[in-house]
Image 1 (cartoon, rainbow, N blue to C red):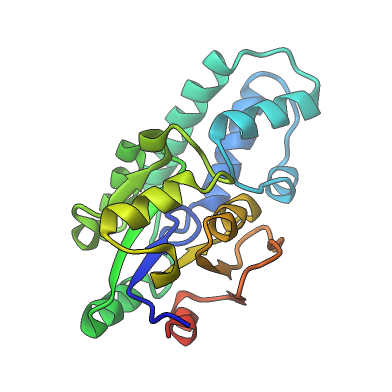
Image 2: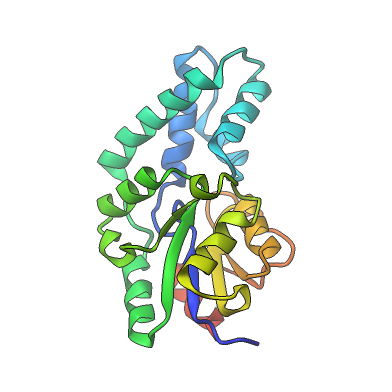
Length: 214
């Protein structure tokens, strides 16, 4: 087995504790249009992926006739406000990053979100200084998880082969992307406990990641 030279992190639900906030924003958006979407229902169906797909799936499940051109800006506006007031880093995030620095192991972050959203989340949680020049967005590849392209692009941009990397994500679609990229993939359990075939393990807290770094 290759030694881990680079750890690739998902952002939301992995580095920053955002997934409940995302579900609250989803619930608020649809309630503002008169639809009933309780937080528990939003959380039950949360599997990650492209925002447009999440909004479309929820809209169709609720039987609504609403344009994504209306839903997506409204969702991003509500979530931005929630991030500003409530976003926190995942427990142990800074400790893990400090440990990787000490071990001389590279790392980066790759997300389905736009670059400005990733940067905003890292700034609010005081993790931004760790990721200068190490932020990758699916918008740069025009390919969103569960497709593996953005993860492969981040590994290549950091200068590593897939087998030299370790990827960590919390959602089934993110995990699928990691496995399809041929990168050893670890599941950090979030609001959705569903994993994906082929992951090498599952953790509850970020500090447990160290046991998977060869």
